[in-house]
Image (cartoon, rainbow, N blue to C red; front, side, top):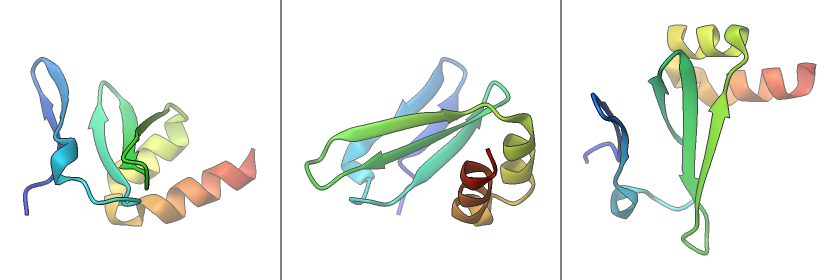
Length: 76
């Protein structure tokens, strides 16, 4: 299945029709991590992670995205 979030020269391109409900998708753009998900009502949510330590951790290990987000959300 095609990943619904892509980074292109013009910026971030989303394909919400490819997104599953309550699944977190992410990309790295302009030294920040962007997180997207679609809820039960089919609303799109977008968040930007700017914390440099969190961004570095996600870039190094994107498969641990949820664990890293959980760690940094409880530290502050």
